[in-house]
Image (cartoon, rainbow, N blue to C red; front, top):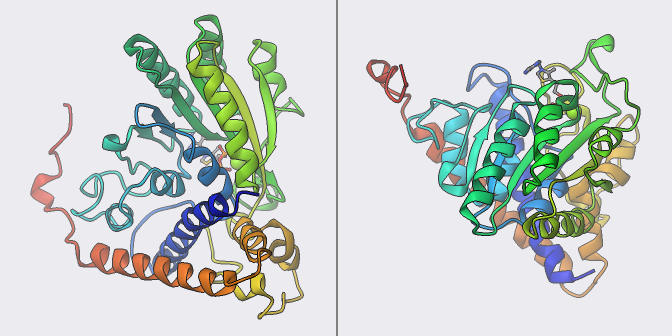
Length: 337
Ligand SMILES: Cc1ncc(C[n+]2csc(CCOP(=O)(O)OP(=O)(O)O)c2C)c(N)n1
Ligand SMILES: [Mg+2]
């Protein structure tokens, strides 16, 4: 393991984690209306993937978007203000959690219309190809997107036209309850291996361990290089276990606020339903254990990193809460018709 790369991944992943813990806490106390989705459990996928992307790449992502926007470098205060529907938000409070977007950072859209982002990213890939600046279109989407029609059509045209389209499917359905058990929707598909779908169109499709940022980074780097070389789209399926807090229909901080003592060994792993999560499936604790294995001053460095991240998120929260709601008289501003 490249230790310094490990620390960089950990910083991004901790930023996402502490951000989502703030969102979950604010959501539970009704600080913003409506449904929302947390990226907890998938941080390694986003951190690994975004470490490879370039400025000229164009990204379309889904409703589980907070981590993606942060990994691309969006200001956490503006992102949190957007989730709270405030004027100081990335989209002046118009997008909210599900459609918060950072066009300046190359996001074409983030959308709650499941599957739509694959079509948008294919269009972005077409534009990138036309511009010829080496940029690629990137779609990040859940496994559920492949139940929709548009990803199939978009993959077909991308394969035919050899578009520089990187398809990153975040499969988080392992351990999900699904609607049959009264939980959040989980994958319902006739294909038992999602790679077969792009595979049928001749698109190379690989599966990667989504809790390993190094593995994701390698896979995305190889795929992006192929796209940039004009060889057409690539599909990556990143596998993660469903975090318990995203199993019910409404998210809840089921595993509490992350205690890095469970990585240093200072806090014993509690027995009970989340023991497996803490010991093996939480990507943040997993990577923290890896960087700590270097010994030396790594435990102190971990504490300092987390303190700095928590301070950043604390400032983001103060900024977001102090930002006003948009003036109702401006409700129709920025609309097309
Ligand atoms: C076109 C469309 N159909 C149905 C829904 C309702 N819906 C919201 S989330 C969801 C499941 C999404 O699963 P997945 O794409 O795997 O993302 P995850 O939330 O698991 O990360 C569904 C079906 C929707 N938002 N859009
Ligand atoms: Mg899913």
